[in-house]
Length: 621
Image (cartoon, rainbow, N blue to C red; front, side, top):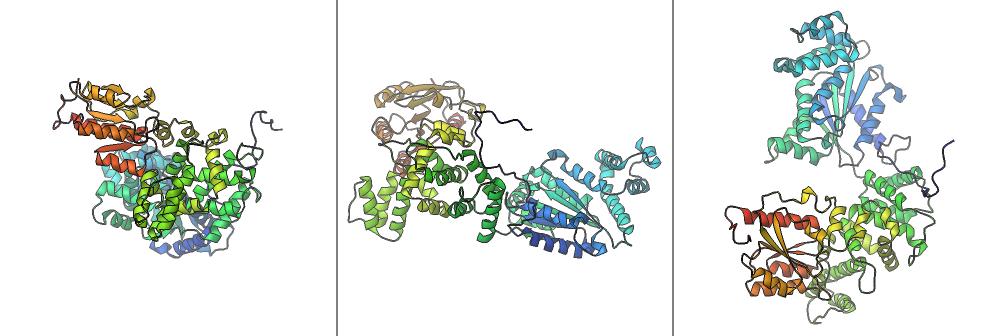
């Protein structure tokens, strides 16, 4: 009997979904139809072999599932009635990504050779004198090598002899011809080699695999079925032969004779897939209703892997007994789902939620973004009255005689600088527009509750608003780690002046080694430091101080007017408005919202300062 879980371990009704190919009897995405057609085409075209079929689609769209279902139809165990000549088919599954990258071509050749009779390989190897001059010759002649030994020995021979490597293609050709000849009475033979995850390999491994297919394994009776993301493979080919014109595409066309792109699932197929996944995860209709299922499909673009990942993340948060202050229990399912969707697919908005604590003096970023979307729509439709209503509610001064676009510009300047880019995503805007005010409030509160700490990347919610924790969530190393060190040499003693009324050592750790840091808490402090001999190579400043949102901008305007510093400036702030970003640009300053961005900008400016064309003594103490 299995031991009971510890008392302090919370159980959940849901089960984590794996990323394995979908091989059940159910076929929600209709892959069986595609597999049957592709297999039929391969079998009917066996006389044309060798040739290559590509199964193309983005990561997570089901390439491995389709290829496995094809393999299942080739195998005799599939239990399907086929003509005798279609039953004598051997299949090989080769995962390129799980193979050491420098050994992918070798492993592919060995896998294919292992499908042939050792006796046949010995005979061909002796005939072609491929193993002459080695101690192995007598071993092969005596037939002492086993099933895999002969294939290994042949590869070991050709791997150390360029001339023998050139003969490998001839050996495979001879071997396949004899293998096929021995199956003429049975209707002929066919070897179908499935190559999965090639697009995840290094560019070098991809190119060498293509070379093996066309040079060493281009033999009768062999068909390759290769799964890949077209963009990833084209990029890898371009890195090797150049990206000019259509060279990468033409190169791939030389490899592939038939390409099949996995179609985007229909609404009905997505509904069936979601239902099947819910059943496997043991989430019933009481947990996920039709609205939640629609949200799941819409937020993932119908990508099966992403749907699985969001369900898994939801299960991590799901607790039927959870009660949170200020959140209606009936909203918890929707709130959890919204949170995992934002976390997985809309990182910028997710971080906006993380940066703004729940409180009377702060506004919910979801409400802000919703106002932005409504104002944007009103401006496009030339409806100034609707924009005025939003401006008035937000307490933003305006002139009623201005046009709707000009009024919207006032609104945009007052809101986060990330909103314009987010508004381009139609799926995200539909997601926000579908939220009720109660759901927005509940989601904001949930994002800052202890319950949200169970989600992957929860540390972003522990941030202090400086942006450093956001960088960790984005996948950057912890502040102060080697990845934050300057890629270019820094002149020892190079001075950086940092203005911040509440300086933090954790923020300063982003500075490259060799930099001399001087801090200032206000404009007067900064004046004293900047008028010292040597000035500063770079000026870093906060944006807000106390109750003044634009204090840093006002100070920089004074610094520029007084000619105290005409060099690079970087504002380090967590939530700049579009207006602040535009004003910073007018003053010749950059804006960084997290530690990673700040480090990159500092590296850029300090590298320019240290370059031969720059003065390396002007700002060094």
